[in-house]
Image (cartoon, rainbow, N blue to C red; front, top):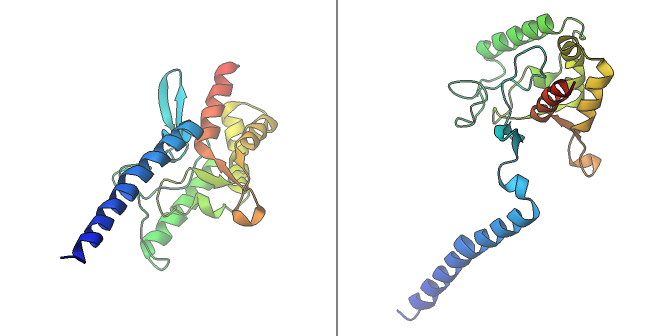
Length: 192
Protein backbone atom coordinates (compact mmCIF):
# COMPACT_ATOMS: atom_id res chain seq x y z
CA UNK A 1 0.00 0.00 0.00
CA UNK A 2 2.95 2.34 0.70
CA UNK A 3 4.06 2.10 -2.96
CA UNK A 4 0.55 2.59 -4.36
CA UNK A 5 -0.12 5.88 -2.57
CA UNK A 6 2.67 7.97 -4.24
CA UNK A 7 1.75 6.52 -7.65
CA UNK A 8 -1.92 7.38 -7.12
CA UNK A 9 -1.08 10.93 -5.95
CA UNK A 10 1.22 11.45 -8.94
CA UNK A 11 -1.53 10.16 -11.26
CA UNK A 12 -4.05 12.63 -9.78
CA UNK A 13 -1.57 15.52 -9.90
CA UNK A 14 -0.63 14.86 -13.53
CA UNK A 15 -4.30 14.45 -14.48
CA UNK A 16 -5.13 17.84 -12.95
CA UNK A 17 -2.15 19.50 -14.65
CA UNK A 18 -2.48 17.94 -18.12
CA UNK A 19 -6.27 17.61 -18.14
CA UNK A 20 -7.21 20.90 -16.49
CA UNK A 21 -4.50 23.49 -15.89
CA UNK A 22 -2.63 23.16 -19.20
CA UNK A 23 -5.77 23.26 -21.44
CA UNK A 24 -7.09 26.22 -19.44
CA UNK A 25 -3.83 28.16 -19.82
CA UNK A 26 -3.54 27.44 -23.56
CA UNK A 27 -7.19 28.44 -24.09
CA UNK A 28 -6.78 31.74 -22.22
CA UNK A 29 -3.48 32.56 -23.95
CA UNK A 30 -4.90 31.57 -27.35
CA UNK A 31 -7.99 33.73 -26.85
CA UNK A 32 -5.82 36.69 -25.89
CA UNK A 33 -3.22 36.37 -28.66
CA UNK A 34 -5.25 34.83 -31.52
CA UNK A 35 -8.95 35.50 -30.84
CA UNK A 36 -10.09 35.12 -34.46
CA UNK A 37 -8.32 31.78 -34.86
CA UNK A 38 -9.50 30.31 -31.57
CA UNK A 39 -13.10 31.08 -32.52
CA UNK A 40 -12.87 28.99 -35.71
CA UNK A 41 -11.51 31.58 -38.18
CA UNK A 42 -15.09 32.48 -39.05
CA UNK A 43 -15.86 34.76 -41.97
CA UNK A 44 -18.55 37.19 -40.84
CA UNK A 45 -20.23 39.64 -43.20
CA UNK A 46 -23.03 41.98 -42.19
CA UNK A 47 -23.43 40.06 -38.94
CA UNK A 48 -23.87 36.71 -40.70
CA UNK A 49 -21.38 33.84 -40.63
CA UNK A 50 -20.49 33.01 -44.25
CA UNK A 51 -18.11 30.16 -43.48
CA UNK A 52 -14.72 29.43 -42.03
CA UNK A 53 -11.32 30.03 -43.54
CA UNK A 54 -10.41 26.52 -42.35
CA UNK A 55 -13.14 24.54 -44.16
CA UNK A 56 -13.61 24.32 -47.91
CA UNK A 57 -17.00 25.09 -49.39
CA UNK A 58 -18.76 23.89 -52.52
CA UNK A 59 -18.50 26.79 -54.98
CA UNK A 60 -19.91 25.73 -58.34
CA UNK A 61 -21.09 28.95 -59.98
CA UNK A 62 -18.91 30.36 -62.80
CA UNK A 63 -18.03 33.55 -60.89
CA UNK A 64 -16.35 31.64 -58.08
CA UNK A 65 -13.09 29.77 -57.75
CA UNK A 66 -13.68 26.08 -57.20
CA UNK A 67 -11.74 24.31 -54.48
CA UNK A 68 -10.62 20.72 -54.34
CA UNK A 69 -13.27 18.08 -54.93
CA UNK A 70 -14.70 16.74 -51.70
CA UNK A 71 -15.41 13.11 -50.85
CA UNK A 72 -17.15 13.77 -47.55
CA UNK A 73 -20.24 11.74 -46.72
CA UNK A 74 -23.77 12.81 -47.63
CA UNK A 75 -22.73 15.96 -49.56
CA UNK A 76 -19.60 17.78 -50.66
CA UNK A 77 -17.65 19.76 -48.05
CA UNK A 78 -19.68 18.38 -45.15
CA UNK A 79 -17.76 19.47 -42.03
CA UNK A 80 -19.60 16.86 -39.96
CA UNK A 81 -18.24 13.97 -42.04
CA UNK A 82 -14.60 14.72 -42.79
CA UNK A 83 -12.73 12.10 -44.79
CA UNK A 84 -11.35 11.05 -48.13
CA UNK A 85 -12.76 8.61 -50.65
CA UNK A 86 -10.31 5.80 -49.81
CA UNK A 87 -10.38 4.64 -53.44
CA UNK A 88 -7.06 3.24 -54.64
CA UNK A 89 -5.33 4.52 -57.76
CA UNK A 90 -6.24 1.31 -59.57
CA UNK A 91 -9.95 1.56 -58.71
CA UNK A 92 -12.08 2.07 -61.86
CA UNK A 93 -14.49 4.30 -59.91
CA UNK A 94 -11.68 6.72 -59.08
CA UNK A 95 -10.43 6.75 -62.67
CA UNK A 96 -13.98 7.41 -63.91
CA UNK A 97 -14.55 10.19 -61.35
CA UNK A 98 -11.29 11.90 -62.30
CA UNK A 99 -12.05 11.65 -66.02
CA UNK A 100 -15.50 13.17 -65.43
CA UNK A 101 -13.96 15.94 -63.30
CA UNK A 102 -11.43 16.76 -66.01
CA UNK A 103 -14.16 16.88 -68.68
CA UNK A 104 -16.31 19.13 -66.48
CA UNK A 105 -13.41 21.49 -65.73
CA UNK A 106 -12.50 21.73 -69.43
CA UNK A 107 -16.10 22.56 -70.34
CA UNK A 108 -16.26 25.25 -67.64
CA UNK A 109 -12.79 26.67 -68.41
CA UNK A 110 -12.47 26.54 -72.22
CA UNK A 111 -9.77 29.22 -72.30
CA UNK A 112 -7.55 27.42 -69.77
CA UNK A 113 -4.71 25.11 -70.72
CA UNK A 114 -5.52 21.44 -71.35
CA UNK A 115 -3.40 20.38 -68.38
CA UNK A 116 -5.61 20.61 -65.30
CA UNK A 117 -3.79 21.19 -61.97
CA UNK A 118 -3.80 18.00 -59.92
CA UNK A 119 -5.54 19.40 -56.86
CA UNK A 120 -8.58 20.40 -58.95
CA UNK A 121 -9.23 16.73 -59.73
CA UNK A 122 -8.08 14.94 -56.57
CA UNK A 123 -9.62 15.07 -53.11
CA UNK A 124 -7.70 15.90 -49.98
CA UNK A 125 -7.45 13.46 -47.06
CA UNK A 126 -9.94 15.47 -45.02
CA UNK A 127 -12.24 16.35 -47.89
CA UNK A 128 -12.40 19.88 -46.46
CA UNK A 129 -9.19 21.53 -47.68
CA UNK A 130 -9.82 25.26 -48.32
CA UNK A 131 -6.42 25.83 -49.96
CA UNK A 132 -5.23 25.59 -53.55
CA UNK A 133 -1.89 26.18 -55.19
CA UNK A 134 -1.26 29.45 -56.99
CA UNK A 135 -1.22 27.57 -60.32
CA UNK A 136 -4.66 26.01 -59.64
CA UNK A 137 -6.06 29.46 -58.91
CA UNK A 138 -4.38 30.98 -61.99
CA UNK A 139 -5.86 28.21 -64.14
CA UNK A 140 -9.37 29.38 -63.16
CA UNK A 141 -8.83 33.16 -63.35
CA UNK A 142 -10.04 33.62 -66.97
CA UNK A 143 -13.39 31.91 -66.20
CA UNK A 144 -13.96 33.93 -63.03
CA UNK A 145 -13.03 37.19 -64.78
CA UNK A 146 -15.37 36.43 -67.69
CA UNK A 147 -18.27 35.49 -65.39
CA UNK A 148 -17.84 38.58 -63.21
CA UNK A 149 -17.08 40.88 -66.16
CA UNK A 150 -13.88 42.06 -64.49
CA UNK A 151 -10.39 42.48 -65.92
CA UNK A 152 -8.07 39.53 -65.29
CA UNK A 153 -5.66 41.91 -63.55
CA UNK A 154 -8.29 42.75 -60.88
CA UNK A 155 -8.92 39.07 -60.17
CA UNK A 156 -5.14 38.48 -59.97
CA UNK A 157 -4.82 41.27 -57.38
CA UNK A 158 -7.50 39.69 -55.20
CA UNK A 159 -5.85 36.27 -55.48
CA UNK A 160 -2.47 37.81 -54.60
CA UNK A 161 -4.00 39.41 -51.50
CA UNK A 162 -4.96 35.97 -50.15
CA UNK A 163 -1.80 34.13 -51.16
CA UNK A 164 -0.11 32.61 -48.14
CA UNK A 165 3.64 32.09 -48.37
CA UNK A 166 5.41 29.82 -45.88
CA UNK A 167 7.74 31.41 -43.37
CA UNK A 168 10.64 29.52 -44.96
CA UNK A 169 10.43 28.02 -48.46
CA UNK A 170 11.18 24.47 -47.29
CA UNK A 171 8.25 24.56 -44.83
CA UNK A 172 5.58 24.06 -47.50
CA UNK A 173 4.15 25.39 -50.71
CA UNK A 174 2.63 28.78 -51.39
CA UNK A 175 -1.17 28.42 -51.22
CA UNK A 176 -4.32 30.50 -51.63
CA UNK A 177 -7.42 30.32 -49.43
CA UNK A 178 -10.29 29.74 -51.89
CA UNK A 179 -13.05 30.64 -49.42
CA UNK A 180 -11.43 33.98 -48.56
CA UNK A 181 -10.91 34.85 -52.23
CA UNK A 182 -14.54 34.06 -53.10
CA UNK A 183 -15.86 36.14 -50.20
CA UNK A 184 -13.56 39.00 -51.25
CA UNK A 185 -14.86 38.72 -54.83
CA UNK A 186 -18.43 39.10 -53.57
CA UNK A 187 -17.39 42.07 -51.45
CA UNK A 188 -15.57 43.62 -54.45
CA UNK A 189 -18.61 43.14 -56.71
CA UNK A 190 -20.95 44.69 -54.13
CA UNK A 191 -18.66 47.69 -53.76
CA UNK A 192 -18.91 48.54 -57.46
